Every structure is written in C-alpha cells, then in structure tokens.
Length: 295
Image (tube, rainbow, N blue to C red; front, side):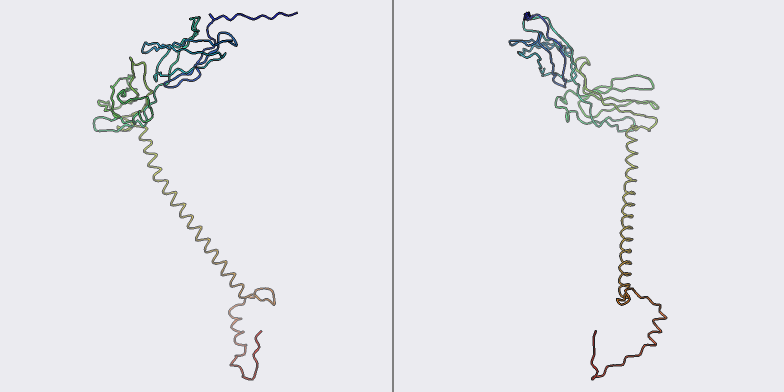
C-alpha cells in the first residue's frame, strides 16, 4: 500500500539562495530560487534596491514561473553601494544582500615633469576609455610623504594636469590621481599611483628615470646588433661567392686537362711543357697535294 501526499505551497516563505552572478560598473545580475520547487503558476516578486550612498529606493516587479529566476538591475552608478531585497509580491519573508558596483578605472599614463621650483602631474583623460565619466566631475589628487608618514589631499581639477609646489628636499612622495569622489567620498574611482624620489633622482620620477635609461640602452644596443648582423650577412655572401668562383675555376681547369683515353686529368709542370715543346717538330705548312684529315 502507498499514499501520495502533495504539500500545500507556502507563499509566506522567502526566496532562496539569493546571490549576485555578475557585477559591472552600472549593472548587477542577481539570481534566486523560488520559495518552493516547481511552481505551478506565475509568481510575482518585488525587487527593492536601496542606494546606501544617495539614500534612495527603487522597486522593480518580476514575474516568473521558473524555479530559478535571474534578473539584471540596471542604471546603477560606478563605485556605488546598494542593498537588494527580494520577496514575493504579497510582502512575505524577504531575502537580502549587499552589492558594490565596480568603480571607474584609474587614469592612464600618469607622468611627472620637473620644473625649477615645482612639479607638474600629467595624465590621459579618463573619458577616453570610460563612457560613464564626465570631465565636469574632475579628478582629485592625493600625496603621501613616506618620511613623515602623512597623506595629504592636494585638491581637485577638471584639467588633465596639476601643479605641486613646496616639496621638501630628501623626501619621497607618492602621488595618486583618481576620478573625484562623490557624496562625502563614498563613490570614488580607482587611483593611479606614481612614486617620486626627490633626493635619489634629483627631481625626476624614479619610474620615469628607469624607463628612460632602458630606452637609451635599447637605442644604442639595437642599432649595433643590427649592424653586426648586416656585416656577418655580407661576409657570408662574399665567402660563398669566392668559394663558388674557385670551385668553378678548378672545374674548368680540370676539364681542360681531362683525357678521355686515360679516363683522368693530366697535369704537368712548366719544365715538362717546355721540353715537350722543344722536342716536338715544328709544323711549317701543308702541301697542296696532301689531303687533310680532320678527326
């Protein structure tokens, strides 16, 4: 004997296994499971998104009959902090989690140019690679003095350069440039950091100096190696041509002294050749009545 039991769905239960699948700069993909397996009808969910920085709320409605539900929250801000709550539309028990979106990237190509009594920081515009960044937001610059162990806020600018003065001799500094922080410093971009050793590099950036030295060495070594390779190539070609010329001359010489009757080449000294010329009779001419035979 057996008995089939069908459980009555409880719509007061919270969604299960709420988690973030992927988080970007302006969106977040979240996923959860229904309160019970295999729903037999569409279930209406309420997704509440609380902006912990701006102190604002948004509610989205999601309808699905699937056991697993995936939803993309859009129109978020880079570097933002959010509290997400998911529950059934009848305001049952809820599931919640916190999400931090990806901040804006750090500015590229941060460099230092040394002047007489100050330095200039330069970097590429962040708008070139970040569509969500507006130049009117600007950048903020910080400086860390390793000798004094102090971090100072130098200011902000909407330009792509910044002037720094009153640096102390013998102090090592680290400069950071990032997208300006919003709402009390809670939404910031990733910082670009550059080291500056005023004493060791005589007012030049250490990383820039190292890269400059590497560039100078490469500028000298590469042409020298190229000339050596070209010289070796020309030398091999000349040797090869001389070898071929000598081989061809020897072959021609050997062929001119080859005797088909003996099956070998005959070479003689100059003295022998002279003696044979003295002993051989001199040919003075031919008689008209003697036939000439050409073999």
